[in-house]
Structure formats: structure tokens, C-alpha cells
Image (cartoon, rainbow, N blue to C red; front, side, top):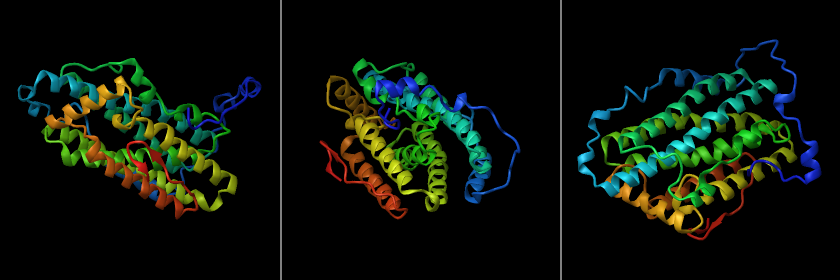
Length: 317
């Protein structure tokens, strides 16, 4: 749970209240726009809806071109994608509760109604792709890999009033989703199967708005943030990169090396070789590094300082 602070057993016993324990106070309802760029994202999202059942050219998926080994590997890959998207379905409503409880701008509340729908269809389309490849897998083939893909703690942090919303959005959106967007953009370039490529392109199109939301919000808030809030934001982003991204949450080759992660990396390579999605370490590594460097530079311009990171397969970056 990288976004939550470590507590002593005594503190844990006392910390029984979450946002859900607070009395509801929704009035007066205010729909004025305080962050116009986020309101524009809401309108753009409503105009760019797509349906996984009807807007994907599923009839172009020709399984006869692939070996059984490739199909099983691709099932693993698209199932893993579905797991990460599924997590976002639960974190969106939790953040909506946070927006309302803290009386955040209605622009944010409106956009996240659409963001929830988008994450749901991302999960649905990844699940459907896995099903059509031979069957969705409900969990990693080897249980040991669950430690890399289980959770990033956002849902719990969203309901914890001790964790500033700015820290949650910076870590989840400006860091994790920014990295995810760059990966999907890369996937559109290396994926040859027309159906898999279409899925990656449509998800990437939605992720553009998700990332923009995070940066627009952070830019709007940064001038009023205290040094303590800035420090907490820095800690949250560092934790998201070090404990989630560099632990293999989105990219299996970054996970700690063990038999389970080696098997997932091999599945990714077979999927990439077939052109059914996924990518490989040698191609994704520069994409990942460039993404983190860009995030660091953009946050530095806002007065948020991130350190140099390290990973055994990358070095210092």
C-alpha cells in the first residue's frame, strides 16, 4: 500500500475513521466551472465514447495464424491487462467520494463519472480479447507473481483523510497513468494484429484525457500547496514509481526476478512476436525511462522534486 503512511499498532487502533464515517453534506450543489480545462476534458470524453462489443472489429481476429503457445501467452497478457484496468473501476468511485466530501470543483466530479466508464470498458475489452484468444485467466499462472500485480493502494488512500488528494492524483495519474499512456502509444507501434492494435489505440485515446486531468489539477493546486503538502506529493510519487512501477505492476520485466516473473516475461515475448500486443524489455526500456524523465522534469517545473531512480535492469535514471 505505497500511498498510505506506516503506523504503529497503537495508531492503527485509533485510526478507525475514514471519509465514509463523516456526515454527508452535499448542499449547496455547485456546478460552476473552476478548472475550465478539466470541464473541457469532460465534454471531449462524452463525445468520444466507444463500445467494446460493437466498435472493435472482432471478425478480423484470425486465430488460425497463431500457434497454441502464442495464444496461451496472449491470454496471459490480456488477462493481466484486464486485472490492472479492473482495479481502476474501484478506485474511481472512491475518488468521487473524496471529491464530494472535500467539496472539490464540480469539473473533477463530472470528469470522473466518464473516467469510471472508460476504465470499465478498458477492463471489458481486455477481458473479451482474452476470452476470444481461448479464455480469460482469473489470476497469474504462478501465484508468486501476484505480489507485483495485486494493488497499488489508491482505493484505500482515497478514503483516508490523512493522505492529501494532491498526493493521490500526482502518484496515480501524473506518474502511473502517464507511464501507462506511453506504453500504450508504444504498443500501437509494435502490435501487428489488427484487433489487438485497435484495442491499444482506443485505450490510448482515453488515457490522453486521464493524464491531462491529473496535470491540469496539479497545476491548478500547486500555488496554494504548503511545503508539507509538496513533500507528501513527492513521497507518494516516489513510492508509486519505486514500489509499483519498478515492481512490475504494468511491465513484467521490471518485476523481481523469480520463476513466476520469468514465465510472465516469456509470455510477453511470445505475444509480442505474434504481434498480438505486449512488448519486450529491449524495446520498452527506453520508453519507460523517457517517461519517468519527462514526469520528473514536468514536476520540477511545479516545484516538486523527484530523485534519480534505480533498477537492476536499467541502472540509475
